[in-house]
Length: 286
Image 1 (cartoon, rainbow, N blue to C red):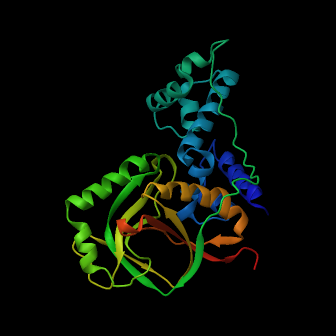
Image 2: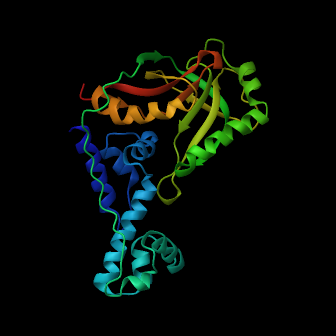
Image 3: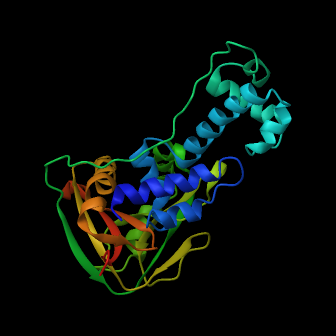
């Protein structure tokens, strides 16, 4: 099954749960993608978070139901996962610009959000510099927080500022394993929660064999193969690499993504480059 078919199969799974309960884990499985990657991959490919897509689609169907059935607003609210008419009304007004009760009137103007369909075509034509590395098992220690996927661009820089204010970078230099790989200060994008509270864990860390300071987290990685992508310029350039990785490299490279966190490796400023480390498990279909 090609990449487009896999992603559209995942969308089928999301759509099938709109009037009941969406199985995000099953959608990730159909996409052939570990849950660690599915939230982020969907956001880059669709231009919105999973939670936003499901919310907009549910409110589109809810409006159609109100017009077709003319039933109670509370019944429609519960059908689409809202625990109270008030919460449903706020979300409904945000999308449609009117109250649910007004949607039942003839001629009411509503905003439909259509079903998403993926189609991947040849694009780009510019090089992506990467290499494959096989690392032995390693351990990372660091500090971090749970971040809303929809607010990651704002909250992740705040985590860096907080770490700098608390002197964490000096501790990384002190506790980091000399020559450890991945190198530098790491931004580890770990697992999180799904659905309306869609989040992921972002951990600032270093490869280390030392005891983690109080309040820090410890992550152990098994021996794995990694695809390593270079991002020339400032740290912000990594966002373009993330986007191109999901849009261009994953559909064409033939590797499967491993069920492990991805790692952003921030190198010394004088190098004027950083790296994105993605764990892979060999070529799909081997």
